[in-house]
Length: 367
Ligand code: F0G
Image (tube, rainbow, N blue to C red; front, side):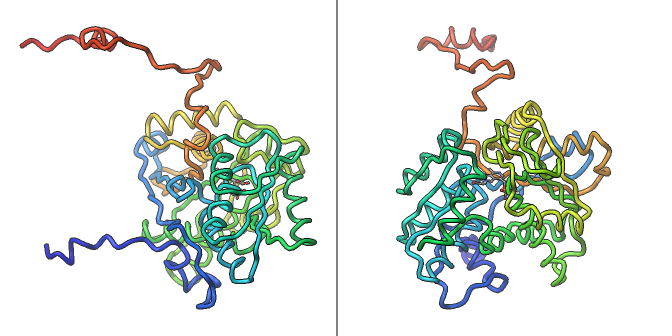
């Protein structure tokens, strides 16, 4: 192999540069990137064996701030900078604020984040703090935070970077492009967690655009899952006090509700609700059998797959892509809890090989 062939590993340039011809950017757009996108699409034999489908996991925890939000944030912050914004604002259950704070830091912009009081995971809060965001804990839920963020952006000189900003959805659609490139076509099914339904909408848009330009031959059926205590789309009504351990998707009035209903209709999609118990079971299954550590909201994709498979809705041999949206280190406490609520603690042992071997139940190999 020549040296040139060996050095094929060029650096991934972030989603705006990789997909410049498919995004609304020009030479005048200052590209604010941390190298987001290009995340692995991982075959999951353990999930394929359980369902009879060909299952792949799109691991979005591998983005720079460890969630899928970076794909949309590179666009939103680049466009904010292009428009001369000095400050950006978002409401967040945690990941959007972590991403906004990081990209704003890179661009030299001030970031303001509104988060529901006491209800965001420590990893995410620490990211917003680390990147020097102005963090306000609103005494209300996420939906209250979003109302206020929109109000502020409408009436004060702050640029909104929630997914109601179309630049966010545009950036996020690149994940669908990556899936089509990796598989050579769109999958039969695509499963995502649903909070504001922005990502559901974004994947649908990406797949639709790929189909339109002939990169793929079909649209996947878009399956979205909400937590049972926080399932407005499934129930068909706003949930006033959404409740779930999956704090990322504790949303009672999704911002992209109408767009998601369109995507659902066109793709012959499905919306389902999953209990917290099943979310945590799926969380454990993904960690123990597939080796992928995610936050609880992300595990709902796995739970949704198992639920639909058990219902007979996933034919044998179908190609299924699950998006897992955020890294497990964002909210690690769930890995340390057993089903009965007790905390896992490692066994403490002395500095003694024989005793450790005994604890492990190992028999010495005869000499
Ligand atoms: N998964 C994770 C880890 C999330 O953080 C979110 C949304 C979703 C799924 C749902 O995506 O809203 O596009 O349907 N988090 C937002 C936030 C609300 O503020 O970080 P969606």
